[in-house]
Length: 305
Image (tube, rainbow, N blue to C red):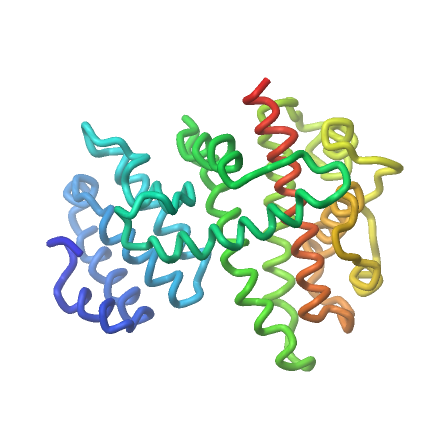
């Protein structure tokens, strides 16, 4: 793992004590910060990378993508090194073809998930044909190389939403008495990703006057191919869930995503008797298809044009 990691930390990782490893390494990194100048010079790519793996294997997907992105940031500082060939960037760009990465099996797992949702998207009415190579070349890599590094949040959110989805699906039908908060916040994160993709798109400038999601959809509707009246208001979450169907047209998927965003961003107390593993997956598929459609029409089309 490299000389920067204390041996006891390495032992925790290889013993698969991943939460303990994360705690240990956070303490180790905090101790290095006693001298801020030295901490800045210290190359922390390897610790961050293995923290990303440990967090992922602990089902803490948001922390995982944070650490992988932090490792990628360290690679940008190394002279005479192509960051895109380094393990952290291979992860962030979901590249399973280069075996020079300890997290290869994790990358392959996420790529499988992405291939499935791309297939679901491609079979919808009005879809613009996508492949994982197109998503990688026109969205993941450009955002990782964006001169404004905060744009990489689009990538971390995209990956963490995909990674967390199966984990939440396995939980939701275990009992009906528990809180739905973990499922609501996961869905909301996907909705916020969709909204962010619209706001940060390189094709159509977005001003403060179009910062509201409904106004955004009216502004970008012709590019997205949204048909019919655009209304994002909804006061019945359970009713929305009951209306879901497999592979809805993209106009319907986008509007259900927008309505979900507006409901869950203001309140997490909703009647949700109909939110089961099946309907949860249907809604998540709508959300990720909306995100993929934004990428296809506002990112890929712009770059190709």
